[in-house]
Amino acid sequence: MGDGAKLNRGLILCTDSFTIQEVITLMNVLKIKYDIDSTIQGIQNQRPRIYILPKSKPKLINICKPYFLPSMLYKLNLNFYY
Image (tube, rainbow, N blue to C red):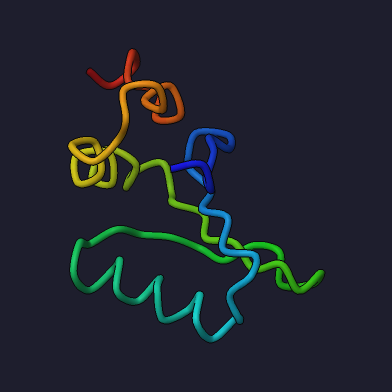
């Protein structure tokens, strides 16, 4: 729950310790299984991170919300969506 944050209107997943190929695999799973659109950032400095596009943010929130500790819900900016 602590390895991500709001970025602009989307969400960033801190996948810094994954290889670029592993990050691409995770992005493909998000798209195929959950129809979540994302991009990759940080390739130039070898710190690849997944950026969840704003249009997919509500989908990801609906999937993840039941597993979040109440003290971490602020990371999802739920006051705006719910």
